[in-house]
Image (cartoon, rainbow, N blue to C red):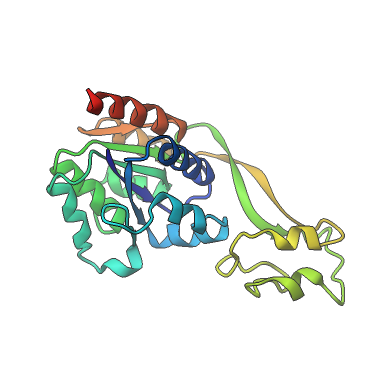
Length: 239
């Protein structure tokens, strides 16, 4: 089975999506996954410390490449593969509210939205896991410094030992690789991640509802559903 996986710039559902694809790769040796990474997606993959996992899922061989949006140019020619029958499905997980809004409006001006458009034209099933469906969501945050706890030590081990030099009086998330070394080095527990509750905007919930009506597009509630659908599809292909 050959899948294309699109990653956008959301932290919510990001780690869960990686876990699903790692599980699929481990359980299905002949599975091939091409990963498409948006500009924002590339940043969050790094800040959540998932770069090595990405290389495990897509090792760089044919149909297992990693395509970064910054390298693809405005015409994103690699999305033409969806017109050539190269993939059995396209999965976007997680899909930010921005990506979902563009898709709902028929806009295809990024690597991910263009991939969805080409997949639809090529008759390739599309599965999307939006981060903002309805109600409230709990999202895991990248590492940050709690300034109410920080003692502003004159000698700060996290600052001195950070391999990416990403820490001053705050953490530069565009430099941070999510390694977590700083967490254990802070004697006062001022550096941590965390979970926040977010309210889904009405406009975002409306855009998800619009996507549900698109031909060839299936909206999934969680990344776990990717595993369930992929497993069933692979069983069908065997028979």
